[in-house]
Length: 162
Length: 162
Image (cartoon, rainbow over all chains, first blue to last red; front, side, top):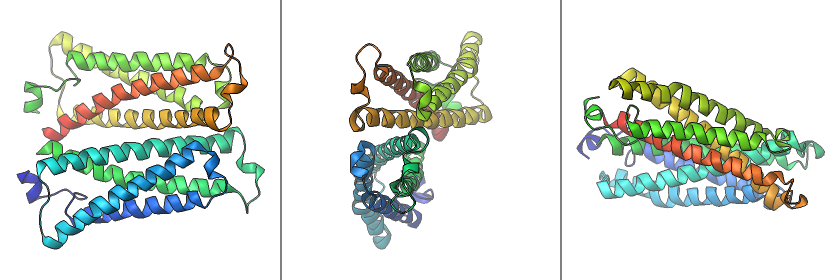
């Protein structure tokens, strides 16, 4: 792991940009859950329930696990990149990355179905239309996934290049 | 690119397992398109139409582009892994990989919505039930994605480790 210790990539664990990415993942996941929970009738759709579960898991992984670890590494000026720990992080990031992407796409598929195929969104007037909140929630979940994907690819690249 | 020339990873371009993976991607994508096109009423669903488009693109990329290239490299015993070409292949594989996964998940989300939330599948009897063909088509598309993901990760790993 010598090369990665000398010049860690942007977004890697143990440097400031890595910590920012983790906190961003957590914040966007929380906002996504908030918008989905506050939209009326979300519980009658399986994909939206899984979206809440997936974003909740992402919050736990990003914040309690890794932002804490990043913060610890930064404050003590210690490098936590030992090979075993690093492999566990890569696998964990990859799992949450794939999980988030699949759930976001499923939810987006259902929203397109609502919008284009059964015209569900046009049946409601502007005030009590849940579609707007569904769309915002899925958009925030997508941003969360983009941030996880950046972290995940940086970690995978680092693991492959050592 | 010296190391990858000496010992290419399983599934890499220019070796037999790479050719098998490419032909497998093409075959499963074709089967997925066949099942979807033959199911009644697929055209009223946007996600299923995009699934056909995505799997069609995958067939073009896997078969006409890369299986041909693999076959050429194998028959002439030539190594086509120059850095520029290899980077183009990695980017192309990554794009088709992400495209396939997103469309497969969207379609799967719609099928879960049909099955669990609006009980669409139980409204039809066994003979003219389109849900079975939808499910088989999406399952075949998922297998296609697994094969692309293997190829894509092997290529990315090779690019990162040189």
